[in-house]
Image (cartoon, rainbow, N blue to C red; front, side):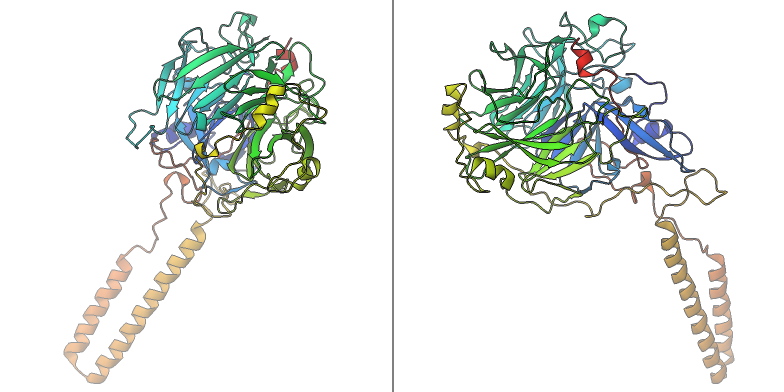
Length: 606
């Protein structure tokens, strides 16, 4: 989908903020996230990076009105960040807490176009921007199909300064970035990342968003039966490898791929997605030992056919079970129906499904989930079913889920966390206790591949996994981003005074008044004392000094200097810890909105 010229950027700073604000309308006071479809995400240590996607905003104006959603075409090539040290209220306008870095791409430079879907593949130090759909073709050439952009945040070994965080890298061999709608997973402890299956064009050539190009040869309509592996063992000598999926392992669109720390090097588990050309009647589970081959395994129960959900993994404290949490998604057939709001758990090695929670009306698809702590999951972005003529905005751009209690929370607080404990509903199915000791250690009725049994009998060396929590809180526990208050009736459209200014002026002016009263009292007492002493010279001195003081008081301005409002940062807290970014301030309150893609997955599989 490609919108008109009324695009605008959000939450940039320094010199870029002027350009971003210039695309606002003159009487616009804020903007909030509506929907953010098919974004890409990666976690580097204490920060999640959010890139691309179909991002839509809901603007608000000084007279209180709102207008149609606006498509953020990302003309400045922004990538957003959320530091895990930042408290989050789920009702927040999260543009107040997102940081921004610039890729050097966007609409002003095709070096890094804004991609919908695809993935950020990385470890704890860097990530690569791989795959995804481009928007309408640029007037300048697109990036080469055998080259990707990567972001280098940290260097391996001793810390050293970085010259340029974003760089390009050739894929090599017969590799291409022209692939989308796959499943992505990263294993930082192994310095490996993967992109599973997805869709491509019939020619393996360029691919664009549905409707962005009149040439159907640029549509991603063919299933890719591939597994892309990124090896990051040697920094700046990373390699990409393309393997064909094992026979019997079907490619699919928008599955979830997770890495599970079991066995010698861990395993990959692919679940969900839409299988081409027919839709699956139940969840399809495939497992791959990262050092060998793929296997399929039947499961017990399950949510049925779902795609475009999100998945995270939680390990029992004793390593006896591994619980994959799957949230949201839809059937891939009808985007006009409400999307799933359920949280399901697939417990391994029993391969048993447990429905853990229902999220109410806020079902979503096309979102990303990350785990800042072992017991917490953040669901970021997404979009809702097109159940009405006007797309419904997300009630919460970020949702917070406690993996232990199976409950949705209203806030994320970096000071509150615990070890992961298996929910009682899952324990009831697999046995043992909250800390482990599962008694259901094989699937029912049996293993479909006996090799999997041997893998689950071997513990993964957890000492290889580096953790970076806990995180020190860098913001107030009730961090919010209030809209700028509108002016009084009859005022101009300048946006009104910030809410803190009247009380500050009241306090300061009150102190000035009290000081003046005190000075006048002292002068009056001094005058009485001088009169009693009868000393003419002292009386003359008092009169002269008194006139001087009164003259000085009259000559000073009584106005109080307004607190500095550099980019509204005093009332719009911004938490961006990007040391390589030149940003220092924030734009007026804005939010991020995403609207449904016009192409359903079913249509993409035609």
